Amino acid sequence: MIFEDIIKSEKKFIALIFFFSLAIRLAYVIPLSPQQLSPDAYDYMNTAVKVSSGLGFGETWRPPGYIGFLAVIFFLFGKSVMLVRIIHSLLGAATCVILFFTAKKIFSANVAKISAFLLSFYPYLIAYTGDLLSETFFTFMIAVSVWAIYVCAEKPTFKNIALTGICFGLTGLTKSTIMPFFLFACAWLWWNTKSFKTGFLVGIVTLLTLFPWSLRNRIYYKKVVPVSTPWLTFYGSSCDEAMYQESRGGFDTPQTDEMNAPAIPSDWEYVMNLPPAERDKICKQKAFDWISRNPDKFLWLMKKRFVHFWRLYPLMAYRWQKRVAMFTSGIYIPLCVFGIFLSLKKFKKTSLLLGLFILYTAVHLFFVVVLRYRVPIDPYIIIFASYSLYMILDKFIRRSAIGRLLRMEPGL
Image (cartoon, rainbow, N blue to C red; front, side):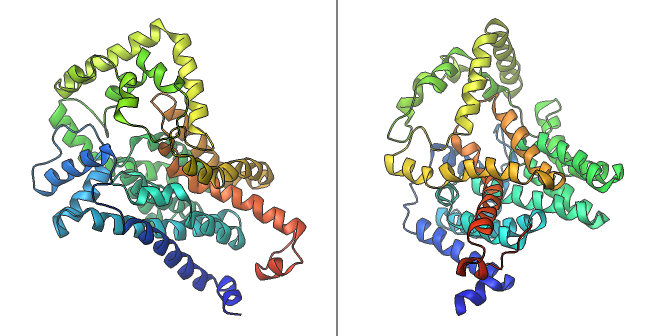
């Protein structure tokens, strides 16, 4: 059978999963209106247009990675929302392929096939393909970085060390919330390779990749800012208004500006219009003053954000979107937890992903949480969920036609 031949052949399966993932994403993005974008998308685009025109990044508080990605596209081909969506679709399909190779290194080719298949139609990542937000690009960069870590752990050559460090740096320049994980990854490489030099050199290359942007910030802001300053967002997340953000409950419609208005500090417009250096100083002071006066509220916020970050479905979305989420992430997350326990014997390999879950979650507890911030690490939830599915299939239907088709072997 042609289908059986494709499943058994790794090269044919990879080609199939790439084009299947690409087709789904293109079918979604092509009919979309160019105006069907999130508010943040316009900020990314406007800054990217300035960069592509040679006007620089200006006073944007956003990291440069995704803006630079858009700027390159706009410089080469002109400003085109559809072209970005098509490139997003290619990145999404490539992410499925990269996840295959990562899952294969951790578990097996069979688990890798399940992982790539589940990710190919994962609704969150398909949805963000059509928006000009950083999630699609960031997910791709994390996927490349995590794969590079495993490659470097197996063969810590100078080439692999340099590749890993560069990937670290570029991913960190997309969103700095990933940087604590990269510090952990350097230590993980030391542990797995039994060579301090490997983790140390990866860290050095990462810093060298960040250095040009950090130097730009030093000149522009007159102070050391490795990637971006968090204080504006931190202030918006550490105030009485943030309590409303985490306690208002769910709605059967997406969030609107009117719904979000009570969650914005009363002096937000004033603060936003301050010079960057003064704004950071004031926001930092306001945030820490509020925390020192309200430690109980701050702890309450962190608990609520943890629950919000790992919700099985979005709080504010149409009912059909919530149902779709429950039939995908609502199943994958429990299976992921089960898979973590099932894979304890492989802890040395899986510990990298566990560190990603823990550190990436911990960073976001200090800021206002929306579920899309978790999406870039969802591929690794899917890897553990796929391992659970594999073990279930292996145990109960190994000798069936499906089991023979997947070439399942006992005792993985």
